Image 1 (cartoon, rainbow, N blue to C red):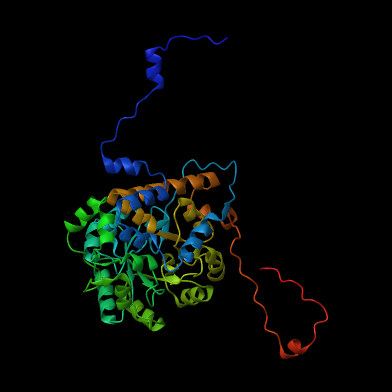
Image 2 (cartoon, rainbow, N blue to C red):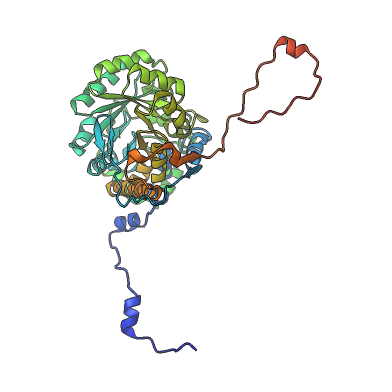
Length: 434
C-alpha cells in the first residue's frame, strides 16, 4: 500500500519553481522562438500583409521556392558513431577572409519596409557575429551608412547592371571606397519576375493606402508608427522611389547584360568578385575557368523564373565539374542550420540566408536578427556534433544522401524517317524514369 501524507511546504517549494516573468515584450517573444519558422510566425503577426508577403512570397505559383525547401527536407544524414565532437569549430575561410559561421546575410531589397531598422540591424548583427553582410543595389540604406554600422566587419555589395551603366559604375566605385571587400555580380534578373502576391496586394514604394491596407494596419500600429516617424527610405542606387516593385525593378534591370559587362566590372573592382544567380553546370564551368573568385548557385529565392533549377540539387553536379577547391556558394530555401550543414557536406564553401534574416528582422528588429543567427548557430553546432564532426573540413558527401522526389524523365530520342516508316513487330517496351 502507498503511504500518504499531507504535503510538506518545503518539499513543494523544491518541486515548484516559478519562472520569473519577462517584462521586455520583445525579448519575451524572441526567446519563445526556437526555430526560423517560429520567427516567421511572429513576423507575420507583427507586419502588414503587403510587406510580409513581399518577403515571404516568390514568383508566379511559387513552385521554385517550395521545391528548394522540399529539397532540404528530402535529405538523409549519415552520422559516425563513437567519434566525440564535444566542441565544434564552425568558422570558415571564404573569399580571402574569415567568417565565424558558414553562412552570411544575403542581399535583400526594400528592407526598411519590412522593419524600420532594416540593413543597419542586419549589418551590425552580422558584424557582431563575425559573418559577412551583403547590401543590395535595391537596399534602403546607403553604402556609406552600412559601412558605418559595420565598420570592422565584412561588407559585401550586390550589383545589378542597370540600363544606365554609369549608375552601376558609380556604385562599384562607392562600394570600393567604403571598404567593401566582395562584389556580387547578379545575373538572374534581366527582367523582374512575376511576383503575384505583390500585384494582388498593390505593394508599391511608397505603400498604397486602400481600405484593405488600413484595415490590415489597425492591429499593427507599431509598424506604422515606426514607418511614419523615421527618415524617408533611402535607396543605395535609385534616384526615384515611386512605383510598384515590378516597375522599379524593370527600370533598374537590363536584359542586354552580357559577359562583356562582367569583364568591365571586373576591371573596375579591386576586391573579390563572385557571380550570383548561376543555374546550370555549363555556366558554372565557364565562369570558374574564366577566373571569377566564386559563384553562387541561386534562383533568386524563387523570385524570378518559376520552376527554375533547385540550387541545392544542382550543387553536387557543379562541384563534381569545377572541383572541390572552387568557391561554390549556395542560397535559396535555407531555413535550418541542418540545411547549411548539408550544403557544406556536398561541397559548398559557404551559404547565404535571406528570408530567415528578414523573418528575424520583422519579429524584433536588430535583436530579431541576432536571434536568427543564434538559432542557426545552435542548429549547425548540434547537427555537426550528432554527425560526429568537429569542424567544417570534416564534412564530406558521405554524410548526406539526397532522397529522390523530383527526378528528371529520360528524354525520348527522335525517330528517324526509316524507323518511323517501319511497321512495329512488337509493342514498345515501357521506359523507366531516370
